[in-house]
Image (cartoon, rainbow, N blue to C red):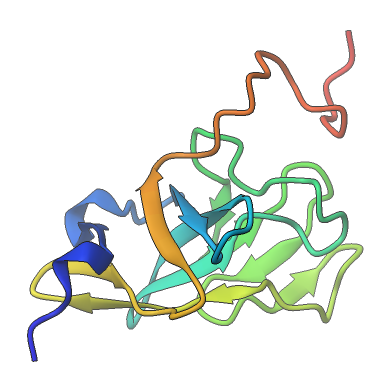
Length: 140
């Protein structure tokens, strides 16, 4: 069975190996949600774009989340999450797991296979803010 073109998120080549690929999804009639795609040894994994320590802290703030040795890093808290399982191996939320978004790779493209979500667009939600979030570690 051919993949549903309406569920196509991006080409596999667009998902970088050393950071994340940010997309916007919608869960039914709810507000849009951000998700990140990350490369894994087996292909690509998808996760909702928030740290499990504080749910208003985005992992990818628009330019890719930091990654180190195959793990996503929360720049605010220093938490580490395995790219393939979402499991937090270090930090204030150690033992927690990122919320998954089911994706698959077929014919060189990444597809949303999670029936709970619909693909909206590439990139994050435009919330109108121009500067660091209130949870940013930047000081002025």
